[in-house]
Length: 169
Image (cartoon, rainbow, N blue to C red; front, side, top):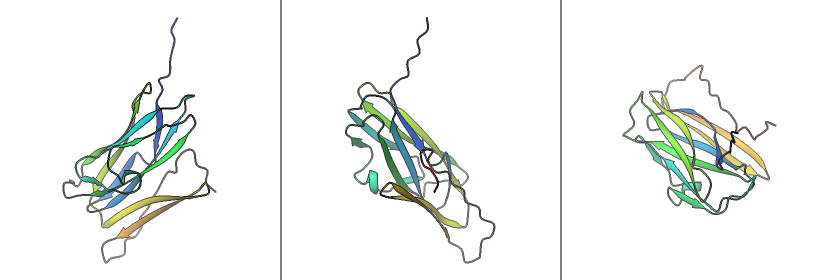
C-alpha cells in the first residue's frame, strides 16, 4: 500500500509572477496567505528575501523590519501582506532577480515560499505602482504609472491579475 500524506503548509499566492521595474522605480507586491488545514499554526515567521538591486521599504506589514513574526494562524484564515520595494543603484538593467517570500512555521507545518521574478528594464517610466485598500470586505486595487520624460508615450499596455480568491464587481 502507498499512502500519500499532504504536508501542512501555508498556501501563498502573489499578485504577479513577473514584475518589470524601471531604474529608480518603485513597486508593490501583494501576497495572500491561506491556512487550508484543520489545525492552527502556533507561530509563523514571514521573511522576504530581497535580492541585490532592490530595497524593502519599511512600510505596512514590514514597518517593523524583516523578518516578521506573527502569532497563531487559524484554519481557513486568510491574511494579506503587502511589500513595497524600490530599485537601488545596484540594479543592472536587463537583469532578472528572484524576490522570495518565505513562511517559516514553528511546529509541524512545512516552510512555504513564493517567487516573483523582477526584471530591471530600461524604460521612460519612473514607476509603476500597484496598491490595494480594504473597506468592509471591499478591496480596491489602484495602479499608478508615472512618466518621467517630457514626451508623450503612446501604446502603453498595463495588465494585472487580481488574487484568485477575489471576484470582480
